[in-house]
Length: 463
Image (cartoon, rainbow, N blue to C red; front, side, top):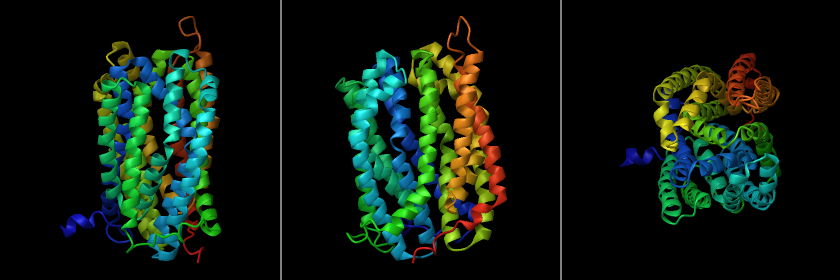
């Protein structure tokens, strides 16, 4: 019993064999990321099977706008994760407690902002993106429901990040699995049983995420041996707030840049028609699973580097970076091969339309190599973020996403216009993604080797 309880506690990653600590931390988080991906995947599968391909396209078309308005939480989560990891590694209880408290308060403020702004800008943005009339009403309802219930999403993701910063990736996993199972049950009930359609999946997701957030809050309230959580700690203190914003803002801006680029590219995708929109949704759902190991190891490397830099153990950071990157590349390569072999079966889960399955598989083959490149990018960027250098990954993302991806997508589309493809070939958006991922890996490796991130540790700066 004691051994079972131990896996649900904060873990010190400054001791033990680096690759073992990284793997031990990553496995629960990887399973959790699978469960997280099942949220959106369940939505897509259920509406695709029970409502139709247009409903599938509606859920997918909503994603870029949804992501754009979630950047506030990305920034808070990133800054909090880095600060928690470094203060925990440095054994600074007071600073750790203030960081978690400020994080919870800022999340509440950000949630209120999104609840107000989100519903106001949803339909105008969908119209700006030339969303087809056949799906725009569904998109609008889906997004408004999601934004009104945003607090559950916000608190789960940010508090799960706090738990991971403390080295506890298992508790977040258990809570996520519970809410994922609930989400699937509610999806089936609301869509197949009650006939609520696209709005039904949004309601199911909001309810399930709210429950996972409550579970995280309960868990943190019981970790009094690690930090203090009281009204005093919830006060928005200037030093901690500024530090959190300084660390999290680049990541938030990175996500904003990425989301804006996705919106611009989504406009191009919409011009290809409903079939290509639905194809894009299917590919991005499978892409979510293919990319999971990369994001998982990236987050693991942030926590690992943060704790060890907080403890001033740079030799462990160097060894862990090598180990973590090699493991990430190996796992990503294996998953990419499996998707290429069995991808057609995965596509068939979302739709019974053979033409749509064939088109989706064709696009997935274009992206294949990019997942291996992203394994390198995410691992090295994770180490830099863990050290407190969140600016470098932001600039790299800006270059590869805005300066490279968007022009390449529109350029290829323009050059491939024909009678059969009046707005260009739909492959343009996927080729541009492959180019940006590959270039990102090259640039990230160059900047990582320059080593400026090594001087970014901050755990001693707030007394």
